[in-house]
Length: 423
Ligand code: GTP
Image 1 (tube, rainbow, N blue to C red):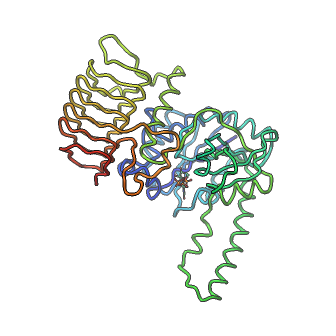
Image 2 (cartoon, helix red, strand yellow; image 1 turned 60 degrees about the vertical axis):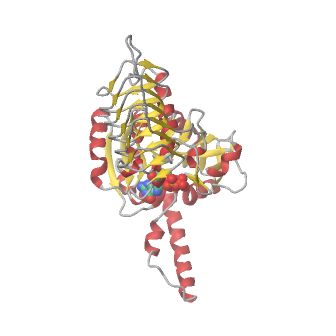
Image 3 (tube, rainbow, N blue to C red; image 1 turned 30 degrees about the horizontal axis):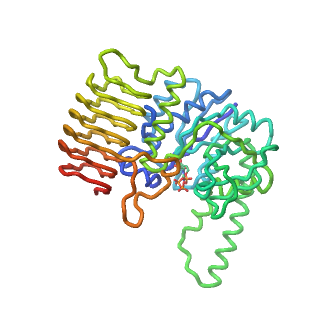
């Protein structure tokens, strides 16, 4: 029997996902027509012998209940649970804290997946390689551009033995172009290894505190909390690599991070393209009499699309959206209950819930490349070109052009805006 843990973080994380995370926790934001973490769950449901998926986070208990009830109906052979951390324990702290619950039933292998990624998730192959090599854990890595390797956790891999020789978090100088993907599988004995790391850390903390009081430095009282806060990659995987207990599995499918709200658009495109190569019923099919569809397009059954509208590629249209005559949309996500009037254009953009786009209105962002989602919104005080994002309930008046901007919720835009963050 195998189990999986998905780290969902909490309300104080995913700050780069604002303004969209102001209304919906990032893990539930839809890409490819489904919440981000649904894609992790769907991939896990295909792993042989996987019986339980546990979400660990510090959102309130009720946040994931409706979503998990739906998952329970869709994947009845799997049990779902949400476990809430008493405070932010880091990427390994909650995993360790809830070890008794994770170990209940004696799982042989335990997957761990981050939320803020979009991936082809070759989990069956990952597990097969993990079992073949028999080490304590396996990290899934992906090849990244040498020039952007410093933005990731990098792993030095012996490709013959699959041994992960070193792990370095965001290295200043080049060490490897194999980046951690946020997907791991561990043998159940991982918790004994983690317990030893925790013991060592507790001794080091005691030592530091003793030194601090000897030098008369003030204690901020956070020591007890910090000692339980554990980072998976820096505190655990680095130690596993040093002890030759970590394997690396190379993912050759697609992968990218979903950190900023802008990165939801390329993630949406990747999942829609994946659906177009499978026999998934997700994508809209062109029909005579319109609308005109190009490439992969998802349309919720409750949306009303005028037959003269032109949609695609890489477009998701959500519930109760109304798209008027002559509207053009590509590379965009249109969230629930948005109304888009005649001849408007939405390109490289996200239009938040309840938005209104007037006649001949234009909402246009710039295409982003692979590593851009890690970049800042502004550079030297100037807004960078990126996806155009309208928060919830933003109204764009007739003939107004919003370009490369981020607009916070509940705004009425009656004049053109270029490269602005509109608070
Ligand atoms: P950087 O990528 O380093 O900038 O930080 P980040 O917060 O964007 O990502 P991080 O690597 O810290 O988080 C990876 C995953 O773990 C995400 O899915 C987070 O939501 C989740 N996560 C991060 N910290 C915690 C935590 O304290 N508890 C839980 N349960 N999840 C966490």
